Image 1 (spheres, rainbow, N blue to C red):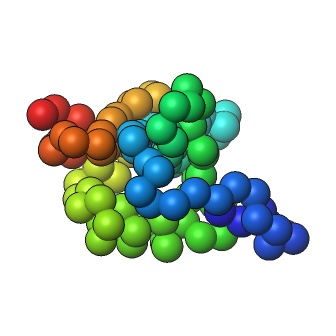
Image 2 (image 1 turned 180 degrees about the vertical axis):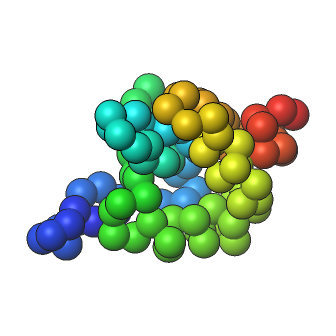
Length: 102
């Protein structure tokens, strides 16, 4: 993940370290920002990335290709507007549908 405008590395992890992937929206008053969090084994906090940051398309491609996360989650998280819509996209050892169900 990179920080704009400096393009400095903000955080880094390997795909095999990830134990959970979640998505949600941040309400920033007049619009929403879609976010993805990656939880690393043994950690309680998520590495956060949002749609405004450099590397977002690469993250989505990696979720599709490496973790087999369908793009269906984008619609689930995007609506209704201004609602958190916390959604589990993937957990190690589990197969989840777009709405987070097993």
